[in-house]
Image (cartoon, rainbow, N blue to C red; front, side, top):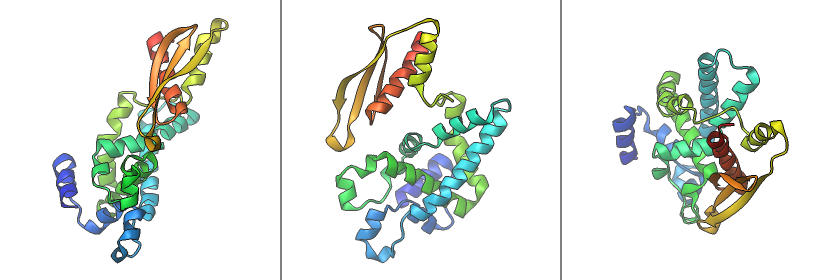
Length: 229
């Protein structure tokens, strides 16, 4: 944990008073199972707490920042911000993925890159920060790592870009929209799908994702922006 503590202090001015909270947050169950001295201490319980803190912070921030946004749209936007894909990306951007303690089997099968594991890791870290420093410190960290993305519109209230694209393009009549898998890269346990979206036979967007569905959504999102629809 020494290197992680240096990283947190240098990049986020965070210094834990009780290191046990940090150790628990960074310990996956697979590591705990292989190290009996940990007495089944791993991050699932603290992740439960972090999830609640994160949802409260995002709800409050969106409520204040978008005073005219309707409840339904606020809920959609919050869901995108706290979804598995988003939080796993944040775990990587904040380098938490490099310090998580994994069992040998989990490590070998690519656990360090598994979105679900990284999502839980990020929430667990928020839980640890809350327990050690209180809500304000957790909020300060989240303001640094999430708020800039929201302000730069990295998230949208459209949680279904394929439907949004179809509705916008077909408002004046039928338009042929096709999604074609251009290729698949990566190992079998961590595939990356590459998809094209064709509008009347012409490429309108390209997207990539860990599933065909996610890749299609990204391609549709890019098409919406490129076609200015």
